[in-house]
Image (cartoon, rainbow over all chains, first blue to last red; front, side, top):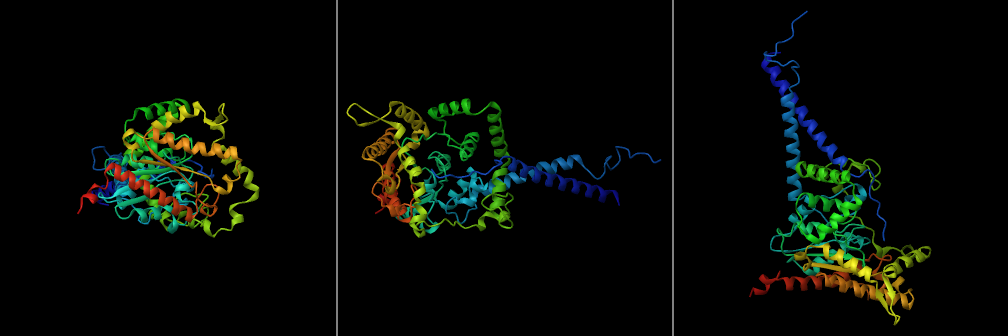
Length: 44
Length: 411
């Protein structure tokens, strides 16, 4: 594979991986912020 | 054996992975998520909002964010309209009233187009939860507003709300969206010192700080509402409903008016319900020398201290607290003495709320058994009566505060 193509592909792949991990990290932060058990409503 | 590639060559040692580009992608992804979360919540996406029914409430692991609720207001309320935010508990949420018969729909109908009524009441919430925080946060954006919520006589309106809805208060506080109000700050300092360890306080602060920057709750609530929900909950335990977008679930509240009487008033529950009704005043009162019920001084003092801190001073005048009475089916079974004590509790609690600067009234003293669906929740007919009473008070508050000056000055 010619060097410029390989270089472009590696940059694109690394960027995409970064973006995907960012979304995953974002989602994990959301889930960590939620209580582990849902609220159970009891009328009073 | 071949020589390793020199560092100065066109390719790094691991040619397929570019750490700097990866980090740039990571940063760009977080910024992108943050911008999307911020944008969608700011402009609002609950196009068919009625109220926070079960599927879009903490009962189903859906925690509406402050930004999301403000977005609902922006979608619905024009700047020239008076914003009416309804807070409080399941009674004001309209439990037992289908969406089309909900009391806030009737309130909107009575108030007309000059007003926009939004029901931000939650099941099991206090008058200082959810809707109260949203109203305060929007005080400058929507200065013509009325906040109305229900409460129990001498139930403490702690200014920081209660779990599981306190997260809205923390979010607003940590984002600096609340007024700096001394009495509330004192109450908060007491809470933080007694109920939270430093570790818990740090966790809350860091979560809200991080969320303020990255908006992960805003983004993933939007994804869950619009496209795909990712949490199994007791309300939607099975596939495929568990992952359905929350917007697919209609507000399907059962109708008290179609329930048989025996389902609403089970004889086996009578004693427990009567104990709750008595509990509305029992521990707050003692008899004086003349045999009349008097509010305990310690109760009065504590209530005044907390109620004073519940809402900032400049917002108290636009706050209406409605005290919820119990179903006459139960109240009429109180002894004469207990009924006198019950009446004193409502009379005194209304006076206390007015004393701290809020408007207040009780409701349901003249309602029928058919106006209730259980001990405390109203049927649609009760909701209509409540709406009539609340509408009159909102119009009075609007008049006093000059919200309708434009209309009255128009020839």
